[in-house]
Image (cartoon, rainbow, N blue to C red):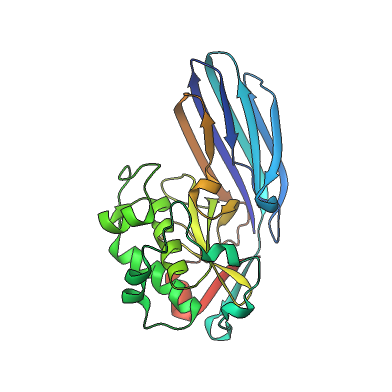
Length: 283
């Protein structure tokens, strides 16, 4: 599928600052950036590089003068997804797990899977297959955690979300990842643009590694699962922040949109997958 994404950010600065942005579409697997542009106003030097083994494209900008910094990113991106019957997904054994997934079994800053192990066992211990566990985790969060804008902060963790029973997409994912890891299912965080999301904004999902693939889950159910454009991938939000700032600029504008440029695009939801007993992964 083909998509067009656009992001506009504006900051007010009163002192020098260094920004690390993760805005560019990832170039890996079945996702390809057909064209893209990044424009700043006023012009400032831009340095681009990859981190996390090429999974995240970072743009570094340093500003010296007070005033306003505007940033505009636009891209045409193609993606590929695969729909797989759940019955054909084999269960992994930890002894033979692909080494690429092993680090995603361990606790991380926002996903304290070690502290949630007993709670995860109480909720999901009756399930054996890792895909069924990940799907049940995502469904449980959707049904039991309230999506409340502004209800959490940058230090909120999976444990905080479970105790408060509220959060935003970031919090939903941290809890999902922590529960999966607590049940020995490798899971990772994916920031993304999301086609037709309302209201338009940056989004995030989590992926669980089963049978050699990373399957997509969105416990918020705010976006179509085949309309996601990967930006960055990591252990949790600490690895995938849209912007990390060293300095004290104030964000005064954030506008994001993503549309499909294919007239044949038909959104796929969690309910669609459950009805057909299918799973979805990004290639």
